[in-house]
Length: 125
Image 1 (cartoon, rainbow, N blue to C red):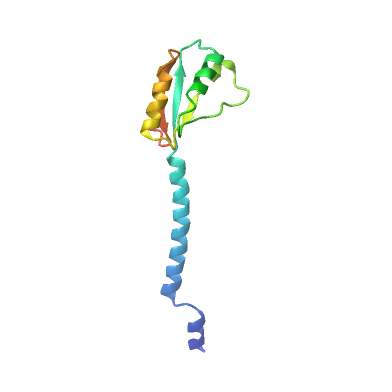
Image 2 (image 1 turned 60 degrees about the vertical axis):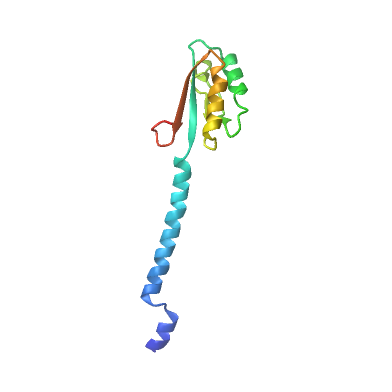
């Protein structure tokens, strides 16, 4: 009888190996998702006080055509005073050259006074 049981139930080292492999696979999946979340980058844009909402939106749109750079959608029902403080570009997929193109585009506008690269580590770019 014990011999039949040995054939049905895998030896303990094999079972432990399978369990470890399963745990490792779950951990790697979680790590991949965590890495994706941690690798987000963006640029916050600051404008001179008193810059009109129309001017902010024109500048935002004018510099939104750079490859791999996307203007982050503005929140709905944002107060006019908060629009200028809410302009961001997602640069997660952008190369350094793409980010430089964005900076050059924004530098054309005297109303832009800040270009602040950020990343998910909260250490800046």
